Length: 235
Image (tube, rainbow, N blue to C red):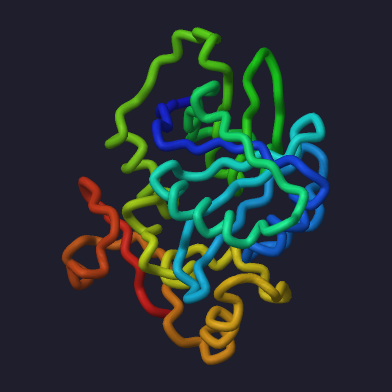
C-alpha cells in the first residue's frame, strides 16, 4: 500500500481525570466515551465557528491521544489553555518522539475507525479511507514513500478533504466537507449555535465534489488534479 510521510502531524497525550470531559466540551463530535480500539474524529472551533484543528482522538493503553496538524497547534493550545482553568488536565506533546505516516489505498474495509498496534506500529484508521501509522523515531523500517502528488491524486479520486486545501482556518466544518465530524445532537461547544443555525436554515453548507476543472468557477476549486479536481459547492 502506498505511504506518505506526514511531516505536519501533531501528537499529544491528554492526562488527568478531567481530560476526556474537557475534550468532549471542545468537540463538535461526541467523545464522552471512546470505545476500545476505536478512533473518533472531531473538530475544535473558535467562538465564531472557525476551525482551530481537526483532532483524531483514541485511547491507547489507558492514554488519551490525539493526532492533529502542527500548523494549527499554537493557536489551538492558546485557545485550550484559556479554558483549562483549575481542571485536572495535563498535555504532553510527543511529536518529536514519533514518526507518523499516511498509508492509503487498498485498506481492509473491516478496519473502519479502528486502532491496532502490532510490531511497534499503531495504525489509526480514518473513516475507512486511510491510516495514520505511528511508530517511534528509534525504529527504522526502511519504508518506501510515494510523492505528495501521488497522494493528492488519490485524495481527488476518493473525495478526501485536506489541510491547506479544503480545510482552512477561515472556514467552518460545513464549508469544508466535514459535516460527518459534527454530531447534530451535541451542544455546548464553541461555535455550536452558529452551526445549528446553518443546519436548521440549510444555508452556507457546502459539499465536496469531484469535478472537471472547466465545469466550475476557478474560485470553487480546492485541489487541482491532472484530470479531475476537487471543489466545494453549495448544496
